[in-house]
Length: 314
Image 1 (tube, rainbow, N blue to C red):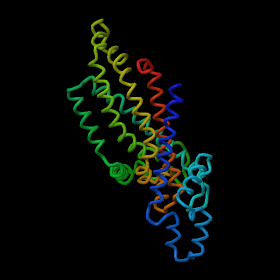
Image 2 (cartoon, rainbow, N blue to C red):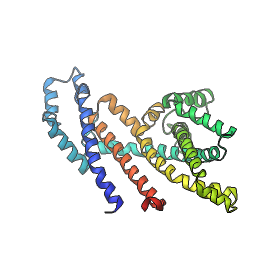
Image 3 (cartoon, helix red, strand yellow):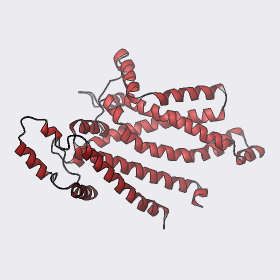
Image 4 (spheres, rainbow, N blue to C red):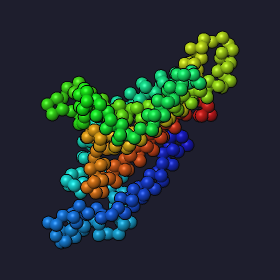
């Protein structure tokens, strides 16, 4: 059986387990799906009961779960409890903003992590390595919300160079305006991930440099630049690719804090709104999409590793 098909079949039970956990956790939250209506004194008990029946909440939980799962598999994700719109429509209108933020963050993180990781690896134990290590440890330790607020305070409030929030200005729609709004949130996500990637690439490349085939390449008289970048870096990038692909999915689901701090109109902001308003259908759809994204990119990372490294295929 092909490796891709085998991994897909293995992912099905995992997704079913995740769906059960998501459904159980969301429905175990205090108040239930109708909590937003129960807190409204203008809504009569008869109206609450009618809503309960129309949404199928009067049925046993196993029946509700099977109906929800069947709808999710067929693309019918229900309607938002907040505004009555289809959940798919609410997610699709927020998806481009999140993809824009995550894509820019990935590019910035890679541009920073690869040179820094290589530099720290080839100068291991020297002052450059110690400086890179200190900076990455400090960046990893930064809370995302605190770092975002700090950048807003410095670059938006004190210096006035960049806007503090949103995706575009009220009367601005040019590329420059969009990039200015994207700069701060993308920088927050990029630095937090670039720090971890730098340390991982430093470790991976350091391990490769210590291998015997690197010593053999030097023994054959190859130039040190060729040994480092053609042999050591090329082999170190294989596990590094796996980490990047996995973090790409985590970026989408983990951008909740960053999007909230910068009022970025993406999926993270939608999740925060749905959580505050107890919009259960939106919450379950978001959590399931995030889980599917992590599993799919995990599969892509595994297959890419097999394709790039003949030793794994063997």
